[in-house]
Image (cartoon, rainbow, N blue to C red):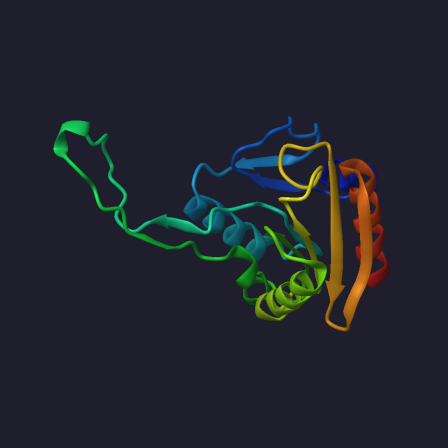
Length: 184
């Protein structure tokens, strides 16, 4: 998506944690080693710059330790009980940081049929006040993380917008950016 947006002439700021590919030359890259840092960086940039479009594609972990240790904990200290708390959702805050920014959220799910995914994605779209949401089932072959291909079902406030079938991530990026351009 970043490369496709650059090729279309967009100024692209990329806030990234772990990248599985090199960032395209020409993006402004901001590394965020933690979910908290990604949230803070997105908040600061979005409030300051009021971007035209925010693509919430990061697969930020849903849970974070309630009491992280600042130092290594030796194994001879016995058992540990790990308490997790929900990670703040960046896409839920974008519209409060910049109400006019077009928000395209992403929703990675596992094991849902298309009807369940529709219900889930439409609820998430409303919760995030997003303009679009692209959802997929990452358990399906060739879909999601670590694959050169992907597939999405795309919804807007009025319902299903498109079904982007399994193909290269590059072609899907072009199709999704076309949908966003039409809606802008």
